[in-house]
Image (cartoon, helix red, strand yellow):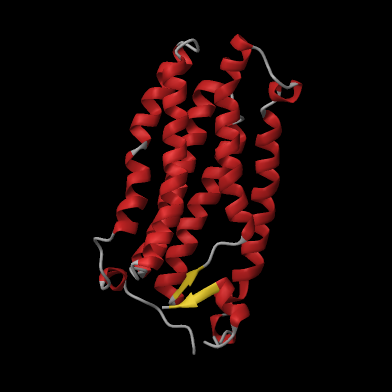
Length: 224
């Protein structure tokens, strides 16, 4: 099968109002509540309830990220829109989390900027692959690890004022920047991996022919 472009309207041919799409959007709708709770905690680290609520909201976001894919498979509601919407919502949520810890808890600004540029390129690449090449890219292992590291880094930075008041249970917890630099390392590898995967598809589409029975190709992208 040769690559072929798609129209944006084709994303909405499948069912739009599904449980999985609702859960994806719910993650984004939780962000204002997360911002408010984190702001209250940052102003007064003794306000433990706000800190705990921020953690609960993070856990709910992680849970919805797992459940949206699960429900899509169980209810047979997998759609192209859902496959594109899910990672976009993930990007908004992770960026929101990193923005909060950058503003209130001294997360390195330059890493936030790099992450923002990476996610912006990711949205552009996803749109380009669909509209110009008729493909939906699949996340690689580095992207999944990166999302997990964002969650760890956000919680670690947020917990620092709490530990400063209550005492650090472990000495290494005094250095949340460890998580930031590990995240940067993983992001760099992920960007290189994506560049290698999609280089020819973007620049030399005429040289690409997809085989629907090729399992190796199916792990990287799918024809739509």
